[in-house]
Length: 118
Ligand SMILES: [Zn+2]
Image 1 (spheres, helix red, strand yellow):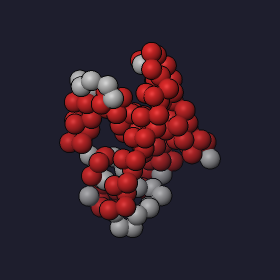
Image 2: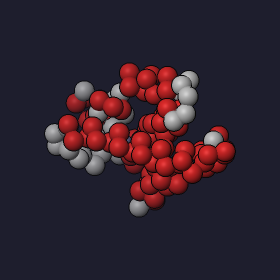
Image 3: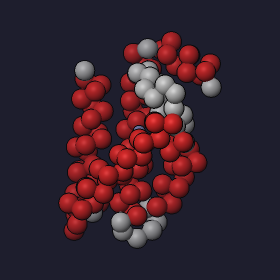
């Protein structure tokens, strides 16, 4: 329950703080664009099964790979709104990674299974 609350706060609430701190002049639009980057999770539809509770998204789903993240870093160097998109996507990856860490702290054997599966 706590992990779920943390996860959704980091996905939905914390981007507002990022927008206020880094994009204060236009924070509302920055926040909305960062929220829209949640659409990156559409890549989960490519997996079979689509949802596995203990599966870590990072480097499993195509838009959650390290290569994709390198592109998201590149977006930070472009002009707005691409910069907002890069910030939102990288924050999304950080949030998903945090979820993986919390999951594997609770279930170390899930990490063993995940590493074996790859
Ligand atoms: Zn994700």
